[in-house]
Image (cartoon, rainbow, N blue to C red):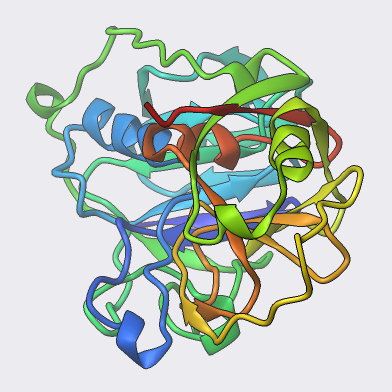
Length: 293
């Protein structure tokens, strides 16, 4: 049986853990922006973690379940109801045929993860179901979900596999603050910037710009200046790298970022904090903390 998409909200993408082994061909891993919430949703449903689920950006989605199943919602960016009754995140729920899930606005967070026991039944491409829209691969036809989509899921409920009635909390400052601390390490081109620029990166409160997305978070603040004009030959980048554009503005690369880049890499986000960044919505402020010993 299946679920039916009445509305998708800002964006809804099918994701799994990501597409490994193709970066040398220019294809990023994709996968969840908030891997902690992704893994928790899978755990609550008794899944292995390899299954496909839906990542919603912010609110607005309306989903109808056409068969009973077990679901879990994690992350943030929305409040949830089933048949107009509020439900909790971070706990497993049994839904019946005909039940309708709605995601409404909330004050904090950016992405909600909807896992279903047994996962969604979609075809893998290059070893993964993760949607990468620029290349039109993964998910359904390589695109974001849209109203009218019907997605098959596993047929049987196994309550022995779920963590039903166990409420698990993940401490994520992006789900409760508008000024968010993010730990960083010095990047390969850290030394290209003078002491003033290095200090500014740490002391400034950087606002996440409105054009931010899964490819990168564009930050707004005072320009970071190079010691001297230097060009970087395009080199490897990965999610969490902080590049500085010719305008002096930093960009934090996301799950769908390109695999090579020609901007200096002043820093990279501490890996455990990538899930925090993934829950930051446009308009909130980041404060970097240098984590190098």
